[in-house]
Image 1 (tube, rainbow, N blue to C red):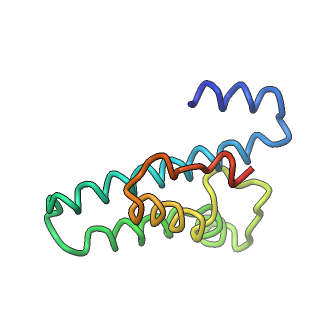
Image 2 (cartoon, rainbow, N blue to C red):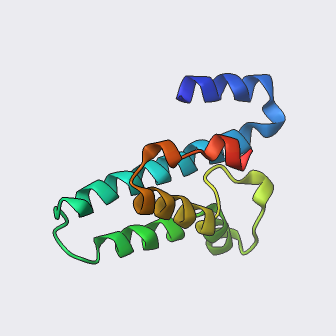
Amino acid sequence: MVSGMRQAQERDPQRANQYSVALELQADCFAGAWASDVSARGLFDQPNEVEEALDAAAAVGDDAIQEQTTGRVDPESWTHGSSAQRVEWFQRGFQTGDPQQCTTFSEVL
């Protein structure tokens, strides 16, 4: 997937950041699907681990980082997605438990 994304970025450099965001959100969705499986098998150490993952996803959104470091938000420069997007895609993976639902490239671009 990464090499295909890099090729798409080279073919369409003006959308390079959008491809990067789609890949990062897909990773968040895959993490949610993995967490769903772990939860279904009762393998979490603590019941609040999913909530911690959602908080972490929100904390590392490009908007949150930009606001904290520069005091302004520039969506055109994002490479990981907004806090809301990251939470949304993790939740999609967690709620469905199905990596096939991690369709960020078709839905984000």
